[in-house]
Image 1 (cartoon, rainbow, N blue to C red):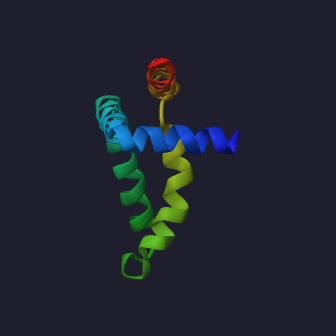
Image 2 (tube, one colour):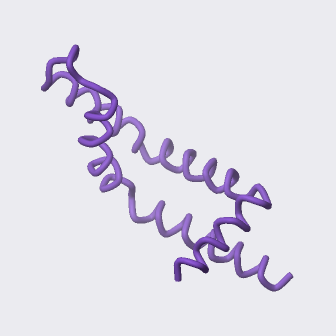
Image 3 (cartoon, helix red, strand yellow):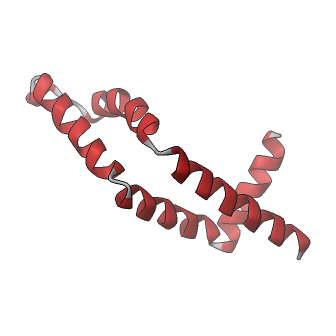
Amino acid sequence: MIVNNTIAHQRLVLTGDRERFKELLRRRLIECGWRDQVRMLVRDFVKENDSSNVTLDMLITKVTPRARALVPDTVKKELLQKIKTHLLTQKDQ
């Protein structure tokens, strides 16, 4: 399965479609308010901790799991379906 994922990833990168899917994801996350939610998580973390001692690594470690959990299932499903459909149509060509 790892080999297939690697091949699929390489195909997306080579065709430039990876960037297109990243842009779609970015737009969907903004539309659903996810970006604002993550921004609030960051602010809360900085407020709860001494802001002068907060490092980027600390912030990433604490906020990333919460941010990932906040991604709506509808966004995940839409992107996954679009990628699958794209790869299947590319495979046939």
